[in-house]
Length: 195
Image 1: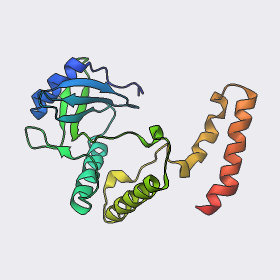
Image 2 (image 1 turned 30 degrees about the horizontal axis):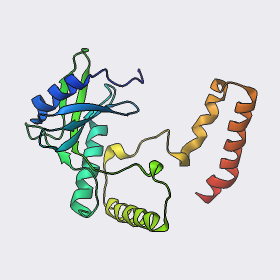
Image 3 (image 1 turned 135 degrees about the vertical axis):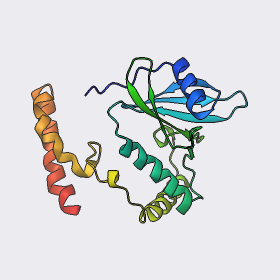
Image 4 (image 1 turned 45 degrees about the vertical axis):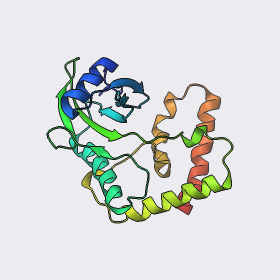
């Protein structure tokens, strides 16, 4: 499986958004790990995010993300989270053939204005309290959420960091490998017992 994002141009993204979601907009590429994401802006200034999923993404994985957002909308409507935009067929996503010949799942969510927390400086106590309250509301709402695709291994889940041990040979340089080994030992000694 390739880890590269789908090769979708802004022009193709705009055509996909119009064809499958009825959204006539210009597309601007956004960052993504494995999926191709685009900010879609209509002539009236309305914005959306078109998500062109990596070809290896299973429908149940996309369905889990959609179900999570819809659950939050129903159980915590006060949260500012993206809202799922239905395809013209009424479905939550569309399966399409891309210009490069691959098949991908597409879905659209509303745009949420703001800046990533990583870019906010300084981070005052009021901001952190507001963030904590929002996460508490989200956590409470998700207590009643269940989906079969939610139980899966995520490499970026820091509570499961031990997977990195088998990849030490890929770390270039003895000093860097030693650093990874030290961090992993500290994780085992400090974090795992606390979990």
